[in-house]
Image 1 (cartoon, one colour):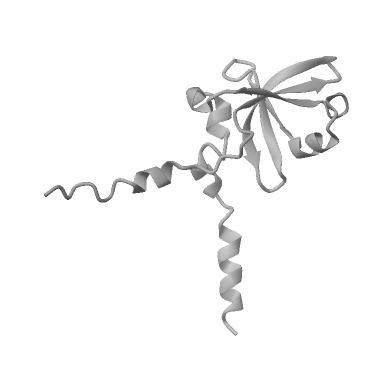
Image 2: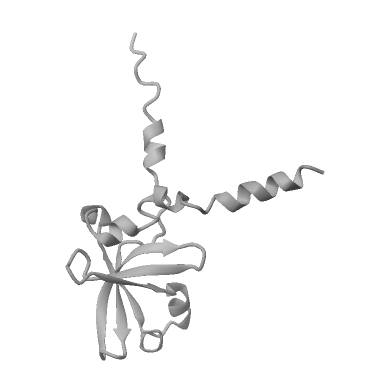
Length: 131
């Protein structure tokens, strides 16, 4: 007997989200206007322009964010000139699901990205196949 173990692997595939490796890392950003380094957490990635979302004061009243070109900062290589530094510390953002940063993150909530980005593509292919 025992025929109940057939379809148990499928849900795991669904749960595997393609999250960029920097998501969840604590980073330091230098704010020249304030003259100090501020700690933030990488909470999202925007594919269309390659910018990462850095969230400050995660889960607090004054939670704020900015989109920043981490790849460019890393290419500069010098934290004093790029105003950016990655730390080795990483947090599990699944513990912060009630924060705005988590709820607005497209990479942590893949269903969010399917708003209107799919519409233009479907129309253009059909027009081509008419000839």
